Image 1 (cartoon, rainbow, N blue to C red):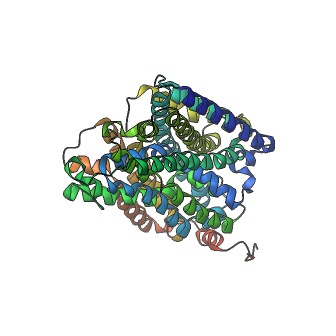
Image 2: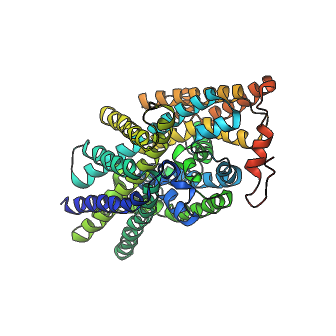
Image 3: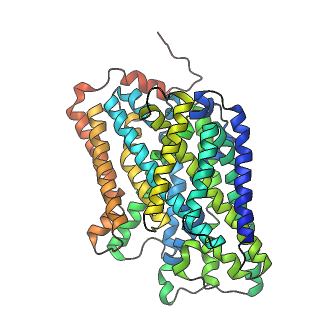
Length: 496
């Protein structure tokens, strides 16, 4: 087995990413360019960029591996990740763009007029961003180890270095172009190999398992495991449906559209792009079953399958192409997260003397290095599981804040802080327990492994309850602010 195709793939993706990024670098001049690409990204380009950063290590590698091991019920991951944009389209996309904010903390402060709410939101953005960056670096370690035979630390270090260069040099303007390019690279990297492998499978007359024996759960459409399995599925669906709108790197993308209408068109295009992409991982899982891929190596199924189905040069070439797509997945998602976290750190954590572009670049270094070091120190953990937990935290915090902040004038600063604390502390405690404990032994572990089903209602109830108890402190400008959020740009507003 030669590592040459993988080496070539990684080098070419790195060079292409830097080359495309330089086009954005030439256009990045102002602070607005670095934070939100001067709000000038058109829907088609923005949708491709969102698809590039959203389809992370969990999507590219994790879904197929989960389906190989646990069966069809794992389809809830891609279904939830895609449907989350439908919820975002209906409830959040256009109003959020009309807020005129740069970041989630900006929106929270503008809506509630509270520096305390802003501080809590800034802390959560950084926490969610770093939690989501961990599986990207972990996925890079798995990919380069499987494709190149390199030590575990090589993948995270290479991805971290490329992200630092691309984000630090051109900010949002630069990574918009690279992420759009990387979406189409990832789609091609899955589509072409699976087309070839299907042709080989037909020629081999391979037959998929009939569901007997250890593979019984493969065809379960909803959930196995009785009551705990059903709870896990519903909690996962809730986390993925509602967590999308709370992910910092997703939300910041809507600030780059010219107006609210463009934000809606962007979201519709994203739904189409994600739907096409997520047709492919189940096919990889099915081929893995047909050719006897080991469930214990499910994390690298997408990388291993070409060599398993097509030994020889053809398999090596296809492996190189898949490796290129996987590496692009880590780069694009990591870049989006780095921009989101760096934007918040630059505004709220860097010294005043480091303002503007200089502060953004310093914040980028911190945003990347902290999770990079954590990945090198922490033991291995499941890529898809860690991403699922990040969605649970986002769903338990920013989802209630955005929905109530956009649609309910009665939200108060005290209610927002209380709800963010309840949902955030509850879901983060569950995340810490789950990452530290690999053994599931009953309902307590089940509730903590998938906390969204109780942490999201807890956050909403706390926000509403405390807001009603402190109704007298509701911001006086809330009504005017909501009118601004829900009024199309074509309707003139009385500024007097």
